[in-house]
Image (tube, rainbow, N blue to C red):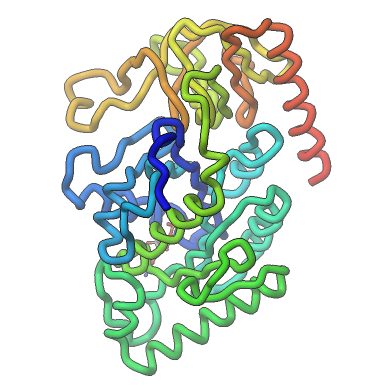
Length: 357
Ligand code: GDP
């Protein structure tokens, strides 16, 4: 059942990767980016500020037989680059989580660790749908690596002994998820992803199981978040500040993930600040320049507008008191006061959350 009539208004779901330190968040993101690029097509990925966009075509190329691209009309997946749940817990959007969906990375040998528990608590509190990446499957003794293959195909190439050792670790993790109050199973056994958490065994090192992870993320988004992804692409832009950064020639800038509408150069925006909301005017919208051009030219290129979902650097006067995690709102055809009140209300909510934890 594919409805293409509204395809131009469906935005890319925003994906966050979290988990205990050293369990492989950074490696997993690198592998996803790297194997996407080695798919070879131009436009295989688009590097944003603070995020990476992987289009459906690329995911489908990586996932091979696992995916039928005609089942999907969401444009792909936008992975937030900044790993770590501390940033995740401050990255809010309209009182919910900025990320629409999350990957909880757990080392198959280590199982749940303190930061895994913390991450689970945050996911529960924000009601964020997630899948578990049971990483480092390749460290199973006797493992016979099958680079980049779907995990079940890779399992077929393993000895009985290796398979049962991995299984044992996987069931340990499934048990720990259950102790945390989540019914979970290996993803290919899950019938209803709204009731059960899918566990995807994989290796960020060899890439096996990565096609499965992308398939599950795409499927989850399509099935359960399609309505939330339907946006007015011409509406006033809304986003969340990832980071405040000084940039030579621009002064203080805010790296922002835009999750709704569009931000245009020259727009009046309200940005959450350390004291008061900041009302300012966009002087430049900056994107990373493609790698090939960076050597000879500047690091960023200016764009006239940027629509959700995307990561962008906003240059505007008075941003030095802007705050990571704070909302960014385009004023457009509303009054500045109205938007300032909206930003204040959202900041108050973030402060309550922070005080509670
Ligand atoms: P992070 O702290 O969660 O971002 O973890 P990293 O991505 O930095 O990984 C921590 C260590 O584990 C690094 O030395 C990685 O090379 C290693 N690592 C990550 N994923 C895998 C994997 O799938 N297999 C193996 N063998 N090592 C991995």
